[in-house]
Image (cartoon, rainbow, N blue to C red):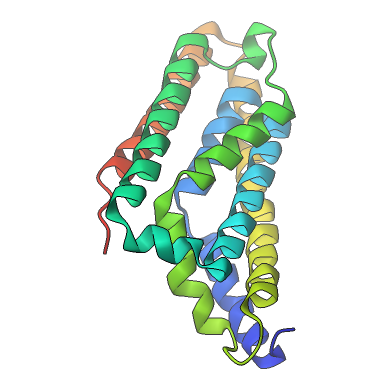
Length: 205
């Protein structure tokens, strides 16, 4: 299915990628502050599934189509911007949900992580540029990309989930003070808004 030597070369590259702070990690951190460790882990799982979807799309040629069509790229990008701003507004309006007795369900956090990942065209372009370097063109691409996508997803699930759990534990302690809880809501909204701004100024290269 996949060349063992290419797989060995892919492993350290994937690990370095997962350990590099980025939008997914910051989103899980924000979800941890906002809703606690369990929703943060669920959001990380949603992001991991999104990564697998991007890998499959790259193998099927969908990512290449998006990369070649500027208007489609921009549609996805602005959908992502709008969704992140909507999440920022929700965090600003409600603050940490657990502090107010309305915990966010893991299912909702999973959906939010999945949507945020799928509407980030930078991930599409990255997967399209990164995964083919470790694929054997003489073999079927879809199984190879799926294996690498699973590996990326598992690494991201562990790393981003750990960041989210840490933020969730911190958030639970801080949420006991009303002023700090309000500050956490503002901080979470600022994280989501910053991710939206980062996505809004993203340029195709």
